[in-house]
Length: 248
Image 1 (tube, rainbow, N blue to C red):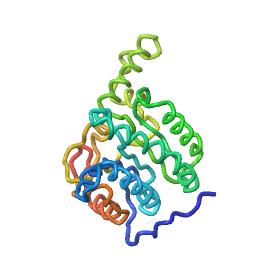
Image 2 (cartoon, one colour):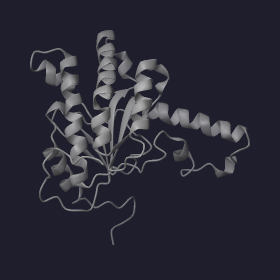
Image 3 (cartoon, rainbow, N blue to C red):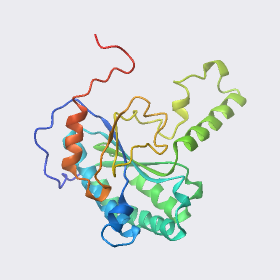
């Protein structure tokens, strides 16, 4: 049986969504540099923050949480930082697999795995398998992910189905393509949060977030708390989401 979350339930959180929250976890490097420490110190601090946020989700009514861990553009960083991040991902997965499984969290990874090392891929596969029967929280980790890359890969798979005669070109529409995306089993995000004060989406869930609500906050990711997430959830519930329609 899944164990109860360690975090104290947040009070005065009304019902009404969001069901799916996506987070661009930004600011680890600046958080470390402000303390006179190397950037990897900040990445380690940011990784520790993930558990608190995941465990807070059930109390907030959040069923799906998607986090941006490493983008296809992040390979441009220094070799030292990239190597350190890959090592951190391996250690995080190995350390957190049991806790995530016991918490009732189902974990999925999205992104292109081809460039990742075999040990990391094996750990990712194992974590997905160990948690595949869980349903309390669905945690999706975007690793070597880029929105444009995802759409390009999806389009190639769709084009192959057309070429093979499995799909008619006239049947290709805005409802067809999402079936080929990495997130095809997930609902679109209701709320996208970016920490650290930057006001851009960096290619995160480009197709899926077409009608998402956005929050760009100044908090650096290692300082982001379950309490602040709860405040953003409350703010989200005051918004009027019309999806292009006109309020009556």
